[in-house]
Length: 278
Image 1 (cartoon, one colour):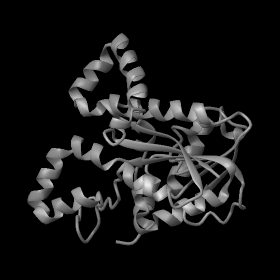
Image 2: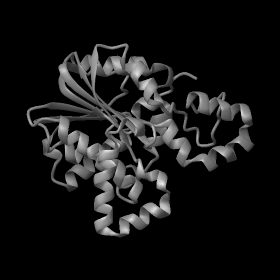
Image 3: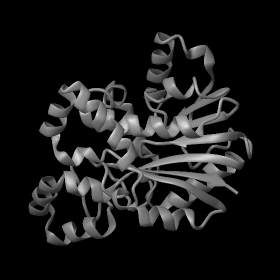
């Protein structure tokens, strides 16, 4: 299946405020947020010009803008861009955003080569690109300065399959065993092989696939991390942990620490890579 920009555009145009609330409404979202935030804090410098692509409603925008000298915000969804603007206005941060753009990551011709010190592309933008993953990374690296840093996040297939195993079993009854073998072998939900009702056609990735992807480009991988590792404990256990404040504080600390271990890289709900352009 080829990349279709209408799939992510339509999905997030109709997402309402869920993109704003999803990282705070439950323990799973908070874990994802805290791991990503820790990485952003450690790699974005106060002097950086930053591009946030796939910014959505602004959950990270509000944090990134305080970490850098200049922030440009972009998303494929015009609805999410407008929602982002409204939130930044509410937080009195709108004057600190250099510009907003509704663009596809495959065509960022509005930006000149080597425009940014850092590009943040988290939340799964790359998962929607399917056969255009290489083109997406190439375009991101084009707008990134030499020695600049790319922070990219992807939905993890192995982590998702652990968490949603019962759903995969249910879908086996719908689509057949060959479709189940397909999703386990490729991580790809597409119209031909794994036609989910939501039409959420994505390539959920493994760390080996991200390694192979970045091996094709002049970059150095500086850090690999999972995120949402403790999500595998189950929703009830996680919410109970969150209700115990001193215990939850410890869990968040250990989530950040454990997600950096090599053996946990594919076990969370997201995979995060930090790469430097050579």
